[in-house]
Image 1 (cartoon, rainbow, N blue to C red):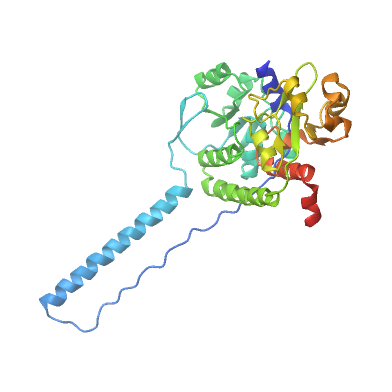
Image 2 (image 1 turned 30 degrees about the vertical axis):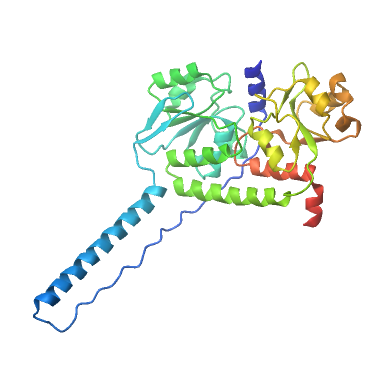
Length: 350
């Protein structure tokens, strides 16, 4: 059932900012200029002094070259490039990938955000953002991957969601394909790990670092806007019906709620699961739910929800699911939307 809930969460998708970063020229340190004296002095002492200055100059030149090399190494991927994936496999990328298949909506959004959408030759049915992605060949869903199509496409690299079965990954690797499985769902910081890791693999280190810094600046500003404000109690309904699922304390979404200035009543839960008894006991002031399958209506009518304070006071707020269930660049937009719900007074000050 937990696997099913994870699949439900992952398939609720939409958004990414197509972000094309221009390549910036590297700073070239100014060279020190040394001029010979016009006067020749026939002196052993002066000769030793000249030799000392010459040695010093060589050392400075050597240091400058080393500094330049360090700068280059920090922004340029050196192949073969080695990474350890979610399953503990050590994956070697022999050269810069030119063709990509993504079996992960958040990774697809990240690839486009880094300006590499033209390299994507395969994606899942759930990869629907940005809009131009629909023209790319589908290789199935997260649970039903068509390995034959992928083998036929023969991409340089395949990025895989952690929800894809390990046997599917093995089958692709047995066909000689390079597969990288990534998963940082435990924390909000994971979005930066996705961007920087994908950037490094695809030789876009510098662009990825600049992009994450830009996102971090936005996040810091948003978090600062609610600092010191009274925190309402809140509960994020991921799914309700025959089973229930929520953003527990060990999830990036649960962390986002706290960052947005709320007290997540399910912070003591784990693995997207929380009992209705615990929920009733906590009785949150605000309920958040995705605009999906008329979920708000279900919450309003289900016996186990209808007596909650948030339901009785009409404080159920619908949000775009893909801003919260994909750990991609649009999480920052999702964070801003949560602040609008939890602290509308912040908007009044702007």
